Image (cartoon, rainbow, N blue to C red; front, side, top):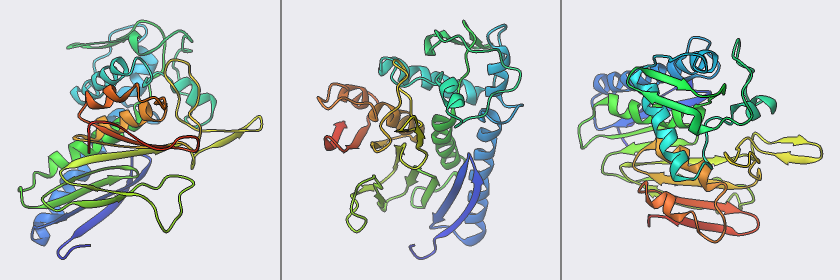
Length: 293
């Protein structure tokens, strides 16, 4: 840590969130960190799949039968979800929640109608009055909401330009300030003494892999990341890190990167969001897609 670095951690968003800052006096640093945590708490309350009073839970229960008003932040994350789904031709899809419930990565939502197996992201309608589902479906905003929480936390800290800050939510990380931060790409199968790294300045990086949360099913390991179109799971040993200006975008695009073909045909998806994906798989090794880092 650099001199003057002040950092605190709290369990939020299903992980341990760390917020650190340097370049401020101690009272100002703690006040900024407090603002960051309050912003994250609000996103958690709005978009948790587990909390029955969240916007997400209300949508899963009610949006197939009526227009449901939601907070503007929830609407923003849903709209970004649809934008990434459209750009990835449905590879990223927040309506894969039923498969995550079946795999016991998520709990069954209380009082929600059984989802239509034909439903996908195109059945979500958003307007200024609220959100409606054309068919019964369950959405899970877990990852993209975590990235969004990192973004709004940094914004809420309201730091001077010469201050340094880092918001780290278990694989979703955003930094600000003039000094680069070294980020380790902790992919499976890598030698622990020679893990690849990247340097990040005023930007975000998110990483995803099914390796830690993998489950053995019918003699095969299965990860928790699901292809939105064919509903297949990504190989658990595959790993993706995406660098982007905002953490919500980076997190969503990791799901696209996990399914990116080796011919590079999805590179334009990342470039369209000013993002760069670093992807590891056992069969192809490391690949880089999108905008040059």
